[in-house]
Each structure stands twice: as C-alpha cells, then as structure tokens.
View (cartoon, rainbow, N blue to C red):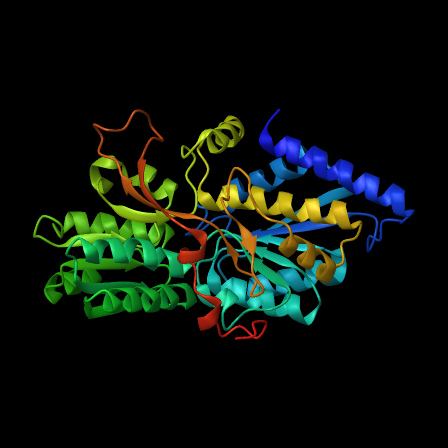
Length: 406
C-alpha cells in the first residue's frame, strides 16, 4: 500500500467518523462533486500538462474511489487553446450550466488570470497547476483560487542566482510577450541585479513563435554572456534549437532556460541540453515516493510525468480530502480547510497554503545530465540542491495581494 493510499484511507475514515459522531449530513451543492479540467490540449503547452494532466487528475479520482462520502465525482475537460476569452467563457459555462465545483489544470497565465476573475465573480474555486506568473497570487490574487506547483519567483531565485554566481553576470532576455514572460523577466532582472549582474538587452517575441532566427541574432549581437529564455513549451524548444543552429554556445555565450520541463529535455535530447541549469518543483526520480507514483503514471501514459502533471494529482487529492473531511463542496469552507492541512506527499515537501493562495513547498536546482551520465531514457536530471519552501517564494512582506495584511 502506498503512502498516498494510506493518507486517503485515513482521511476518509476520519471524515466518516466525524459525520457519524456529529450526526451531520453532507452538504453538497448537488448530486455530484464536479471537477472541470481546463488546459492547452493541442498547442504550445500540450506536453507539459495537456492530456497527460487530465490522466493525472483521473488517477487521483480513481485512487480516491470515484466518490466522496457516497457522492460521485464527475470530470469535465476542455481545450482553452491558449485563449483568455475561450478559457473564461468555458468556465463561465461550466459554472452556469454544469455546476462545476472545482476548475483544475490552468496553464497559460493569461488564461488563468481571466479564469480566476470569473471564479471570483461567481464564488467558484480553482487550483492553478500549470501557470508560472507569480502575479497570480500577488496583484491578481483572489479568495477563489490556489496556485500549486511553481511560479516565476523561485525559477529566478534558483536558476538565475546560480548562473550569476558562476560568473554569468551580463544577460540578454528573450521573453514571451504575455503575462508569464513579463513576470519571469521581471523576477530574473531583480535577482540578476541583486547579485551584481546586469541586463544588457532583450526582446519580446509573440506567443507562440516558430521562427527565432532574428531574436537569436539580436542576442548574439548583444555581447551578453547569458541569454535568458523567459518562455516555455515549444517556444523554449524552438529557441534552443535555433541557438544551436546559429552556434550561439559555440561562440562563447550560454543559454539559461528559466522554465524547462522534463518533456522539453526529452524532446531535444541530452546532447543538445546537457549542462543546462534549471529549477523544478518536482522530479520523477527524486526519491522512492516520487518514483512509485511516476511508474504508475508511466504504465498508463507511456511517458514520465512533468512536475505539472504530478502537481495536478497532488492538488486534486488535497481538494478531495478537504471535501471528505468537511462534508461539503462550499468553496470558502474547502479553501480554508485546504489551507489548514499541511501538504506532505509524493509531490510536495514542507508544503502549505498561505493566505495569498500560494502553495509554498521545497523547490530544486537541477542540471541536465550528459548522455554518458544518463542511465536511461528518462534519467535526465541531477538534483544539485534544495531551495527550502520559505526561501523559494515571494515573502508575504513584499506581497501586493489584497488578502494579505502587511
């Protein structure tokens, strides 16, 4: 029996005992607990979340037994096509017509910010697992969503700080021109400058982009030691591939991939990515608990999971535990219960949900292995160090969130 199943069993038993002792009746809003999974299912971010994230959510529901205190769990899913309008309209329809209790997934930050406004206006609840913009629990925080896996603040604190400390003190930023890219660029700029480096130039590229030729030429012309990639998914893959074709690293510059996913490294291969520093919230081979869950996922999907896909399982389970223990799907009660419970599972170490909705947990500085050091197709990272939860994320003292009393 796994750690997670023990946790689920004890949580369900506790919930049942509490209900019997108090003579209380479960106060569900209708005849089902309904979860809507919204993500990019076909575009730039398909592989880092997409159908694989839906599979992780379905695993969590199956492991929970498919019901909460006798109430069945139903899953809806939709492709947001990386459009804020499509995402917002989908969630509005789910709430109005399907009585969806929780919106999960949420990848492109522009989509997430639009969706969380809909959730706040309609007293809904969302858990953000794929988006990176730290503003989601800063100036865009609401009492109706939680940000689970990672954000741009620890990405900068991990990767950018490590690169500057190794002598990479002049940077050119290649940035995706939307909320996520701007947030990451801002956090990287802060860390580089605080550690004695400087940003010597940069360019914003449309999202998504297939041709990075002109941007890589500008980066080469800048003379910067480091070219920071403030983008993700296929944009990052295309940028690294183009940089290789143009001989960027051979000419003495270094790439810093600020948001690199397991699927990106696997797609490009270790020959092209070896030595790359990155910050991650989770890695499938980090310990026994992670491996056990990842191997179950691999049996279903045929690929090792990204940190986002693992986080979707973790966050869904934490939500269902709260519903079981509280006997209700009321968003305010469930968010409060989730915040009260510590998070220590195969995904998160030292995890907890703060008042701004940020789930803080340990993050990890990793380096991509060389082909010679790798012992298998998915053996791609070496974990170099742990960034403790309390150091990884934006301090509440610096928060602009309306839910925080500074």
